[in-house]
Image (tube, rainbow, N blue to C red; front, side, top):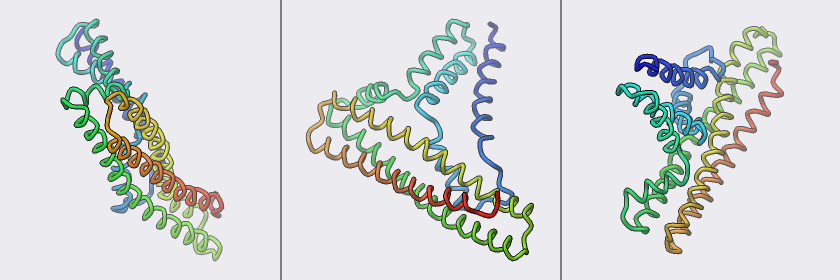
Length: 235
């Protein structure tokens, strides 16, 4: 495989991956609100699964190797290295061991990462609740105007496209959050090998409990929007 062909091949794979993720949601028929824009930006943190992270890591490794003029066997090796760095719990723990000399520091770094995840999730949840509340009001408006004849069904379908787009973003985000939760739980299991003290383990447990609670609360909120959309007059 030549340098240019190898690079084009992996670059095409990267492009295809981004296109597949980009065309997954319905397009709204109006400009997004600040809350909707923020929700989409924040959701990017949860739309990549552990498996996808490994795959994209492999592609990235291959792209970097090809760009540097590597041979085909070197490109394959770069892909393997990228896959290993794609998000496995063991790799994460190994990286902490490289960064910090003591088990205490390693454990504290993991706890800090969990705290940051909870902070990001809290912000996302706040935006999601605003979007959900506004979307319910929008569905109410559309249903009322259909009922009184001031809105045609064609126009109603166009108006509700933004609601459907938000719903798809929210359900996709929840799916990613569940996978993120599993990844963090796997990290917790791997972290046991570090030998953290009781207080550190309790802090990690508390952060994971908080994460699970936030995800469950957000899921409940999203469910109310999904159910409201199901009974809308718009098919």
